Amino acid sequence: MDGRNDGQLLFYDQLIPGSGLLGYLNADHWAVAAPIARHHKFIGSTVADQNDFPREALFEALLRFVEEDLASKQAGALD
Image (cartoon, one colour):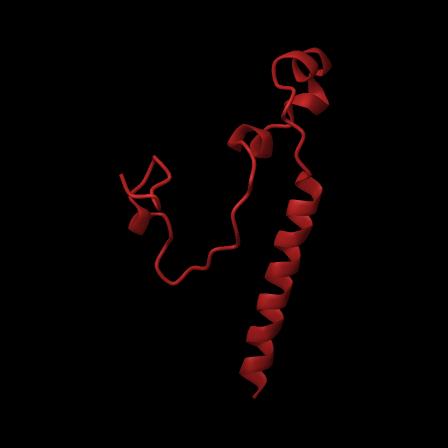
C-alpha cells in the first residue's frame, strides 16, 4: 500500500488537476465535520470525547487563503 493513499482514493486521484492543496488536518474526520461535543453534551463527554476541533479557525484560514489568492490574481491581471 502506498503511503500517499488515504484509503479511499488512489494518491493521484486525490487532487483535482490544476487545483491546490490547502493543507492537512491533524484530526479525526468526524471531529472536523460534526460538532458532536457542542450539540450533544452527554455523547460529547462520554463517547466522542476527542471531538473538539476549532472549526472557526479553519474557516477563517480558508477565507483568508481565498482572499489572498483572488487578490494576487487581480494584481496579476492589472500588470
